[in-house]
Length: 268
Image (cartoon, rainbow, N blue to C red; front, side, top):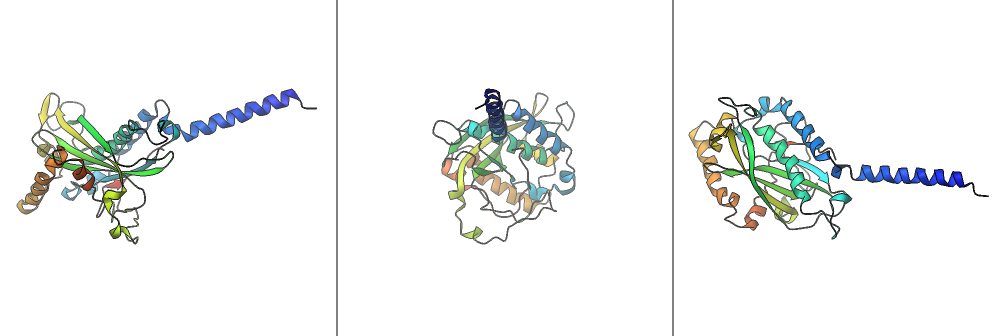
């Protein structure tokens, strides 16, 4: 004869197991997890000694790379990653990226050489869907700048296809750059989505020109020849950053070859 109390206990334990599994499988999307993830990245980047050792003008256009997954709670009724959730992923990616490049002068308090980065706007376009729990990579780098705005591009891409030759901020980290087939892949076909964000640098109420902020952080070369190359690239990509060249140009500016700033792990 079935003992009702045993059945109730078993059902309760099964429900607890299912609830725990659901929470763990969707921990990235729970309340306060955005804050916890960003706080973790914020503390780790500000206490990281690597930029002081390795930051140089060669880092100016290098991407910061990270990877994560899309849990069920990030998916919409079409059973793929919801468009709105891309922006929270970009917060994490751009947070790591900006605190690597600009931690030297970052300070929320006014000071003669202090500034903060303020997001002035961001837009995104989507090319391919990301399925539930599918893994993907996020590559973020400086695209260009003008007198006021710094333009930052982010690409969501298929994971494991491209491997940087080196991680400048993490010289001890091994790479798989020699993996065959890398040169045969059309980079634009691996892009799931692309985004352009624009940032302004502020010292209290004063706007700091991006070139001045970049120079303050040691990201601009001192010799005229190298600076001419930087200026040529900046001018070429400015129309892309302003979205005047169309979204195909934004997708096409995904450049996975060469070095990267570093690989920055997500909590999830």
